[in-house]
Image (cartoon, rainbow, N blue to C red; front, side, top):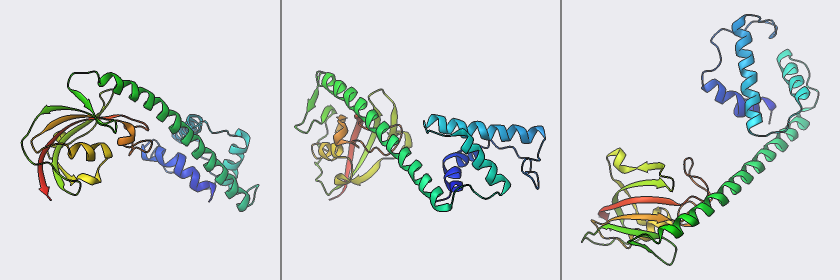
Length: 240
């Protein structure tokens, strides 16, 4: 892998996508020849963005070598290292960054699990809240008198999902359209709860991390180890 690819992927693409680079055409010939104020400003802005990205990722850098590589590339000079050495160095950097990212995720997950356990322990003391042997907590808000779905049934539901701090991450109510899905194709906490509900029921679900996404969430704002809360309304069994 070339340094250019890593540079563009990790640093330049987010910057360019944000529209931060000025619209003035690049000067021809020597890339250092452009002396207009606008060229100087966007050149400095790119440098700030690069530095900020690496600082935020806590990536160890040798500044003189970084500048030397940038200068050699801009001037078309022969690299100081062969392609194999450079590729190995980039591979080492990627591995280092991946390991740090995994460590951050583990630490974040541990903190969220601790907060989630405390929340669930307190929540179980609330009136009307019940727990199943798996650890799923639920509260019946309204009772229906329809059928109960099985694991292979397709159901229609309205729902709203939040984190324990109240942050909403999904809502069929907001979309004004119920969701349809097989009972056995959703997170474990939902699969379990739906098979206890009747059509017409409205429940509140309090789902431990291991019955939700565990340490592998789909993305922000759901973090590793997150307890998820749902208001769920079972509207219909679409197919059995």
